[in-house]
Image (cartoon, rainbow, N blue to C red; front, side, top):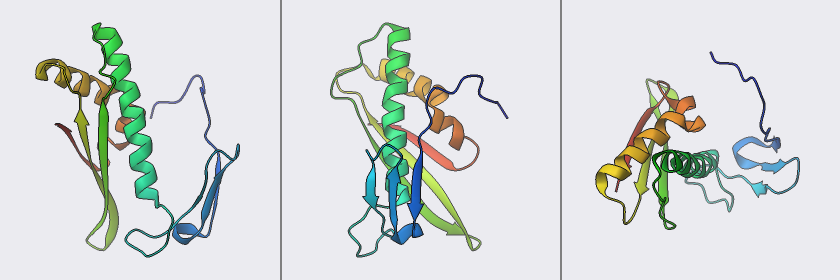
Length: 138
């Protein structure tokens, strides 16, 4: 396991009530109600939060790769993240798909950015070898 040499940021939250509770960040910028997936509650769920965090981080990673490649990242870049919660053999597991849109870039350039981002994105690194992940260039 690789250990951090320098901590750049620490996100701190407090969650109460589990999937039917609340979560708040230490700076109060995040203050949300949680609801189980597919339930009738008005809150979000951990899978949606994970998808939002990963897709935002992935766009940032594509920006790094684009700068290294001296390519302009399109302003309308988007990542539609899908995080599935399911079971196998009675155990709960996740799987994910990132559907990446890089309009106006040639497909081979876009593929280079996506592949590079998947190598350096911290969320991609955390999931690599742990859950099934598919990265689609749309």
